[in-house]
Length: 365
Image (cartoon, rainbow, N blue to C red; front, side, top):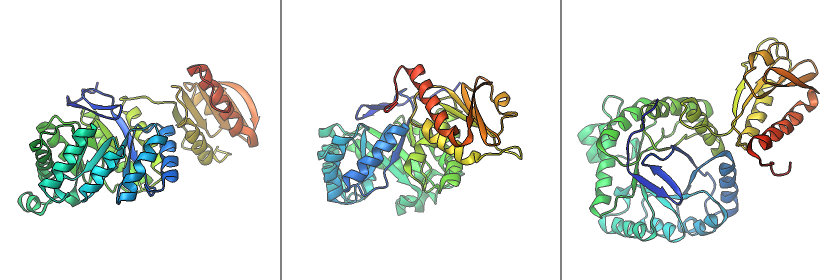
């Protein structure tokens, strides 16, 4: 049983973070924030996949002002990501940002930071203090050295120094992130930080890479930390469609038995008996499952000989054969379907099962 680290609680919009609230999964858009239509469309896709908090880049005033229209069109809490320019931070909050991510040390000095804090207090906006290995001050690096798995001190000291700047302004609605591209440095850093503060922590491995390396690095670092009860919200950073980050994030929580969202997919690794394009079939089924809420177990198997028996614990599943596939439930054959129709018929059966389990028919069903 995982025992969560006790932290303060903050709220980003209606989402509670820390203080015993469920670990939340978030992502960041990769659209031009000033392009409201494109940004809203991506956020809506993220929301459908289960995203609970979304961050947008605010590199200029057009982006800051676009937040008002974006907020009006979405349901997710919205965080503005700011670098260097205090005016953008203030403008983002004035236009409806419900959280901001800043590095308090690079906003141009105490007066500008004070203006940002005053705006955050006025609008009820929490601040995420974000420090990466590449953004540590020269003085801190000189004193502690570049962060490594055995000496991550520079990350911790840099973050706590910046938190101190906010506390000096009487501000405490804070969450902290200290990210490294190295999973072991990330683990060591968050372990130390968790012992020195009770602010909620945002976890992540920065610059983790594409789907496979990014998933592996993030799962190693975040999986270990979450298993130890450290972490209140996180992002899986991938050089991919951000929807993929949400998929990986919830699978990580499922594997740790921390949270269960929607269906669980099991599928065989394929072998010489496979006679269908199982890779494509499994991917399309997985994409459909991301839009479902029912807690069911779904199987995609490669052959009709062993598939139903090997996946007998699945609520529903499919297995392919020579020109024909089967749909099975709890290990028993339910229906035989021509291979060309297998996917579409199976998705229809999934939607029926979703309606039975949740009492809600899917849109268009």
